[in-house]
Length: 150
Image 1: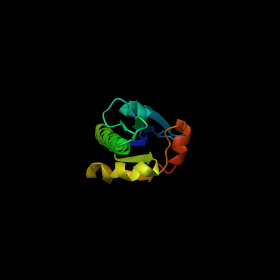
Image 2: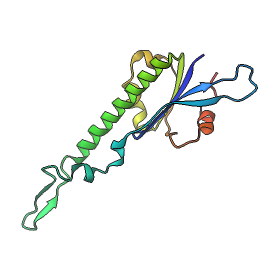
Image 3: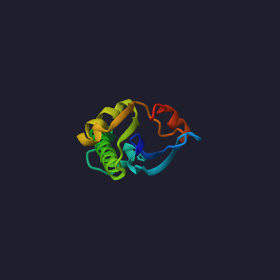
Image 4: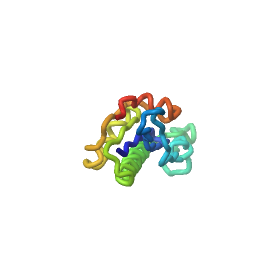
């Protein structure tokens, strides 16, 4: 049985294959099959937008002041783009691995948005969804969080 675990946040994506010992002599192990870091999350909005028109305006006799116009909208667009990228990566991994079931973990703020963006065929194979960011955990601790893997 081919089982994978996928963990993500807006800056990281990791997909693991669960390696089971058929004789049950050893515990399950995780093999990293896909991993990437999104560079977009490392930039602050002031660095992304500092040279764009509209950021500074005339400040009522006090000179130029920062207006901040559009930054939050741009950050929302970046988040949507990253969520779509994660969902596309999940769809691809689940198809490529031809897994029967898969497990997922992402922080609560983005978890549902990612699931909503997935292909229905991929969602149907989702066995367990944890609303927690596990991207910084060691492989052994990740496996413990999904301890009910058959």
